Image 1 (cartoon, rainbow, N blue to C red):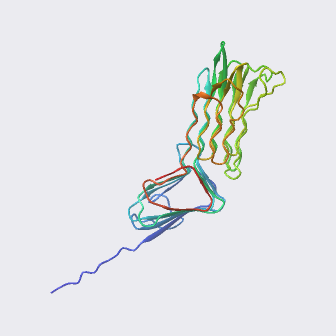
Image 2 (cartoon, rainbow, N blue to C red):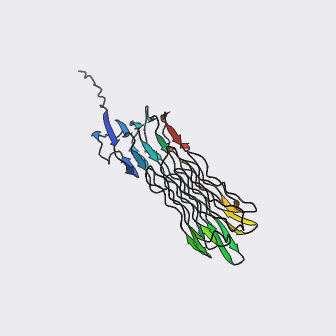
Image 3 (cartoon, helix red, strand yellow):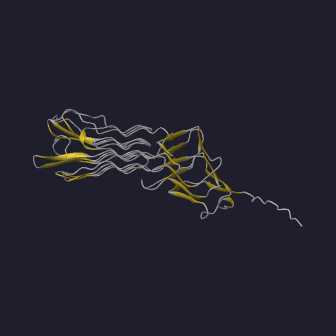
Length: 328
């Protein structure tokens, strides 16, 4: 007697996850997060993740991705459709503290994908929308000259990076601007001291914004000829992209200028001292590097990845803008 062996093919499942409201530090963990529709079965599910029209998904810390998808198993597929904005967090501007400077902080990841996915997996970025890494913060600048402390904080990176503070300057402390709220520009930094006595001033860097559309960088501090009593010096300005740098002159021939914050996914500018007036260290616009003030003291933070794919292969269709390097 013989018996026929019937082959059974396990049916596939589908699971859809929809993000329909503005969200911070969003996670989708397959097998843990409840799908909007359908159900997840490890290794045989067609997974879809979608971001609704004009919805912002953004990070509030450079070490945390704006949207992190994880938990996939071999045999799953993943399709991501984005009609809104995924924004990594900007790095903080470097701070000056009583004779010591700091480099700018690195920007964070926009979209992070981990787990294993096979078959045809896709990412679709629709028209006029963005997937962005955070911008790097600008480096600070300052020093001790003739027993006086001088300091300028770096601009914050695009994606809400805070501007760097200036602490311990002879004339007092200056505060960096805060990062922008969702869809907004960052705040200006503050300054202390007299604009007519350039050896007695300190500046905070401007904050980076969270507005990728028309993401103009913040203006750097504006300075006219040192020693001129009419000179008015201002702290770095907040930007929709990277925040602007701070500027100061310690003595007639020495100038300190911090770096501007990087635009989305771009590096921040350097900070240091030099022998020439330099007022060009604006924050980075769109996905451009932050302007460098002087050099030799600090470096800007690196821009964050727009997408990290966790070793998986994805077909990426970009009808909008993806700012920042994509990591395989």
